Image 1 (cartoon, rainbow, N blue to C red):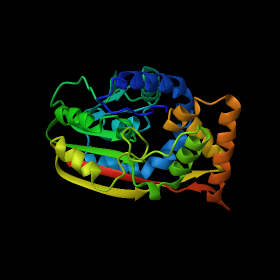
Image 2: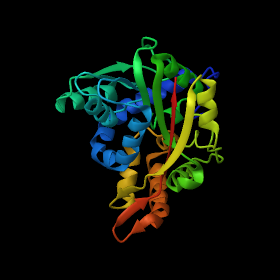
Image 3: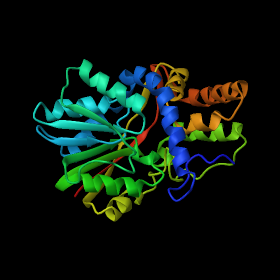
Amino acid sequence: MTVLSPPASSPDTQAFKSSVRAQWDRCATGWDHHTAAIHSWLRQPTDAMLDMAGIAPGCAVLDVAAGAGDQTLDIARRVGPTGRVLATDLSPVILALALHNAQQAGLRNVQTLVADGEDLAVEPTSFDAVVCRLGLMFFPDPLQGLRGMHRALRPGGGICTMVFSRPERNPCIGILMSTAMQHAGLPARDPFTPGGLLSLGKPGLADALFGAAGFQEIATTTLDAPFHMPTARHYLDFVRASASPIQQILSRLSPQAANDAWADMEESLSTFATPGGWVGPNELQLTAARR
């Protein structure tokens, strides 16, 4: 059986992270090309995340697993010229795009650091706020990542993370995963397996992890975030531009077998077509706390 997301204690963890880094390096340009769609999808949840983290003018902010930097630019604008943002990511290629995008937007208060989110090489107590948008759920050991974020915060500093919530509230992800596993001849996976898309959606889990990491005033909320696309195929084009677990599963198949799997996904996802376009249900979970 293919090991997709080994626990942090596994000797394969570093090999797994190296594989993920290589996949994001390959997918970086394609992901960046979907920035407009991502921005539209996550506009309101991102604003809520920044509010809940307490990000304001003059703040120093750590943006963990920043990707191509869509939310990094929002943070940079919010903190203004007297603030600063450090964007980190495992992939140097996608992080270079984040810096390029910031420079193109005329934002000079953004810096980048290639870093494993579970091993953040930043100065302790050097940030007023930390955010992590749709990254923490991919950590094999999210508690280790949260402990690093806790160390990075000044006393009283705020944090907010965004992940996918419960499986039943994110049916598109369920369709993608179950179809991919079936075509790969693999048994169904526990959706809460560490490192998976839905791994932190179990009620109460995020709060428990934040508490174990030393955070106070922990609060979790959920927000509907439907994904609007012209068709299911456009949505799958977006998924194929990422280094998601779906890609990891299908990479073991022949090109024809993988195409058959994508075709089955498209057919199943077409159930979310509406007269005005395709609307995929999603629910996001925001957890905020203070050091």
